[in-house]
Length: 195
View: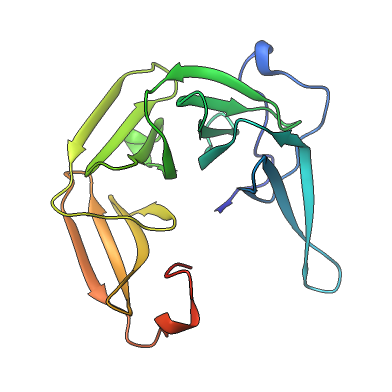
């Protein structure tokens, strides 16, 4: 899941342009086929979950928001490609990666155009610059499989479950993974071993 700022998720190029107007909100993808959803706060203080476009049969995951261009990106499962997602929920191929991922996030500052992701079945922190398509990867110091992660203070942060204990994990841009127990989080409350 990711939080977008007002005015986010606008088309990047004419090829991905749509007549639909974009709306700010919390976006996430779920299900098979994969449906893009937007969460809006309703007048009662709860959330309304609104489908964006039609489900994609090929599936995608590792959703990230490139705030400088207000564009959503993801890794398509069937094509193993980086895709951009237009405001009507349609996927547009950007670059073949040859791998899939379940988590992704953009960095900040000088690295704000880098879409970082964890390729499945590897110990790599990989990235692609969404503007130039330059790619790179660094080995991680240990295995790391969070449900999701965010970028803050020059590192990626996520929560994992290990031995029934919730762990706060940090992955630096150099691939060094460090963890610390979260004693007040009851891991047993999450039967899938994830949040």
